[in-house]
Length: 272
Image 1 (cartoon, rainbow, N blue to C red):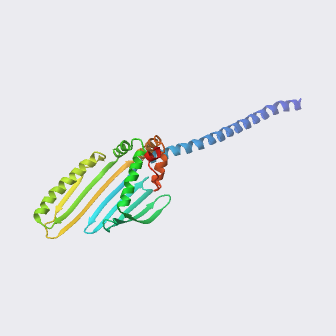
Image 2 (spheres, rainbow, N blue to C red; image 1 turned 180 degrees about the horizontal axis):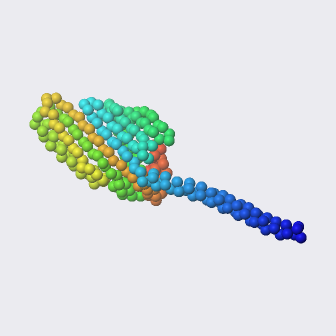
Image 3 (cartoon, rainbow, N blue to C red; image 1 turned 60 degrees about the vertical axis):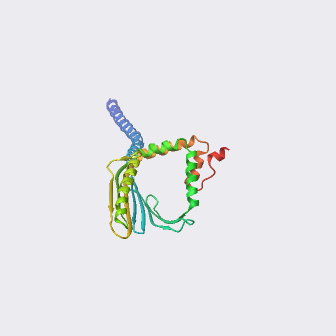
């Protein structure tokens, strides 16, 4: 009887312990399954957040053209991803070497990106190089369906936050200088109106013309343009360009050749 009573009391307790252990193991399995699901979901959510942050950021640019006496300088700064990616291009010298040789330019490039780039390039701009540029433009137009419309749509999303242009000059004669000052005013505002047709001017342009009444001929000018473009629209615009190029036979291949600075024959000649 004593043994029977012990067994009767022992087995319910053992069953309770087993059930408790099974519940613990079940909870642990559920926890592991939850973790295995939570980690990929968290990574996916993080990637979505990072992608949204990138697409809602802006590509900022700062363009400056300056001529002081005989010194010329052209600068372009590009900044994206909240300053994580930076590029600086500078033309510190433009040397005119005659009609046949053209202009000798020196390009200084520096950048802060996943791969840092620093290099100096020298290039001769003559009649042949200009002809090659025009040929490349014609190839790009023929290799892309509706390139002009794509370009206008893209430029319409560029926001110009600053557009300043100042000019000081002297024609060596007071009467000529005064007449040229009025012509400069008209030219500048005509160009500003033409630019406003393609981009969004967030602020009114500031134009300055300062005639210098002296007996010596002098000229100095400085133009500064600052603006931005949405990273999301830049990505979307790139996809649209790929789609338009894919509609033309051999369009993507011709664009690849253009970007590699080794253009092939034009699509029109290839079709012939």
